[in-house]
Length: 302
Ligand SMILES: [Zn+2]
Image 1 (cartoon, rainbow, N blue to C red):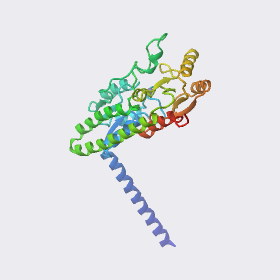
Image 2: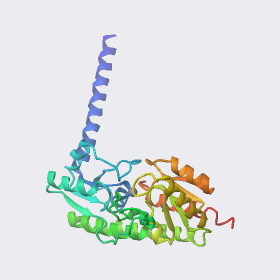
Image 3: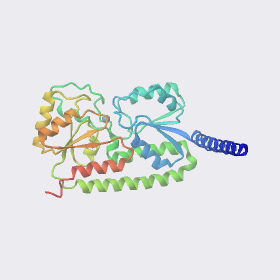
Image 4: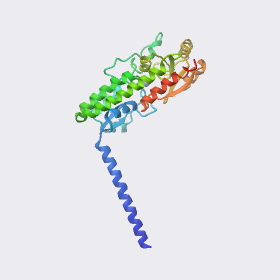
């Protein structure tokens, strides 16, 4: 009887020792890796493609959150202060203030603007500026560069150069990874191009105007429900519905983390279908192809 208890006790002790060891190893490993921070998950995907698992990559804006209205929590600040590099998108709402604060707290961090080689396009809201001022949340420029494969090539070239500069020893690996990644971007681009060839209507509506560079690259016309970063007034909705009728729009995109009521009103009025998309998804290429498939869904019927 007593022996049974003793052997049970020994077993428990052994189990604890093992558990402890594996836990210890795990945390040791993550602590060993240098931390890099990105603003959104598509950037984490790009960086992981280029750098493999040499780094721990920290995403600032959690999925399903709008980067325009995002306010990082104090705990996120602590994690960010351990980062060696911070890849900002470049012109998203909170990034400017946030990166300034970060540079003060962590003078050794290198902050990289992923938009710096791109000429940013005007925000879509400026198509309807007749009776409105110009004070909107994006400062007049459209920050959503990652919706275009062509722009992604530019921004990831900057990411690659920064990684090589930071860790020149592994340059061969990063160059090889990058060329494989670019092949994937090119094939994503070809799939989208083929899907969007000869679609019946090249115009669409999206709640938050996050597809401006996608529209630019593939000769599409983006209309947004959101007006200057806010919900539209009834007269602005009327204007949008009129445009939608003229352009025979059949697609309304909504995004996680944004209001849906106005999208439902507009879609019902013009007889369009509503689709939820997630431009902040880690699955960057899958998401873009999905958007193209939605726009191309009536092609075969015509
Ligand atoms: Zn946005």
